[in-house]
Length: 334
Image (cartoon, rainbow, N blue to C red; front, side, top):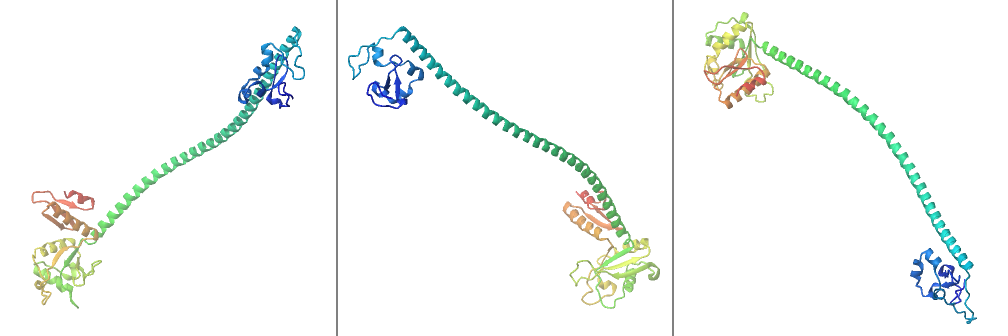
């Protein structure tokens, strides 16, 4: 389209039309900058008038410079106003249509997003319900396991009590079968020794009347468990038929203070061996006696001894006697 000022063909986007004379003008030819032209609102472009119409003079035409100014009739002015109004309405209708289209597009997009979000929420709700059911089942199983565990604990405590009772019973029986035994330590060993003659010599030494045939069940040497010292003589175990005779015999033997091998007729390098006489204790009671002696020494107890296979401690002559029968009773030594 030609510009009315420079008569050059210009793109329609770069032209502006006068609302009075309807002439088309290039924005540069009317003194507008490109930035200012692009900032103009559509309604301002519709109302725009060329400089000639604003001044009330007709714009000169190069081909006919003296062309008289055309006066617009009232009907033409009214028609121009109608055109401007229609153009403005069309402009607003277009803008509203574009806005409505954008709103509809946004609404559709939001609906799609909400639909997807709702599906996701429903999926998670289903999963959470599944988790809740699983957790409820696990809690129920845990509760059942707890009850079962409590029952097993009760059974275990009962079994432990039974085992403890059985162990105590075995220990008592182990010591009971030794109740008629005397353990003799320190007697030198020699090949072809006669232990019965040894018993007779000890009885004569302490003035105890003994009948070997009726009073003695057996007499023998026994190996000490884990004893790696071959130089130490093996203990002699004398088993008698009567526990009461055994107690009397042991009581007299213990009165033989500082008894040595020479006292029972043994000569040579081994004649100075000291001989000791004790109850024949079970392995458990030997361990208890060892622990009791250690604690009694640490706590300042004067006495720790064995009588009739019973371990006893006493702090002084005026103190009560403490019987040591188990590991727990060692706690009495304070």
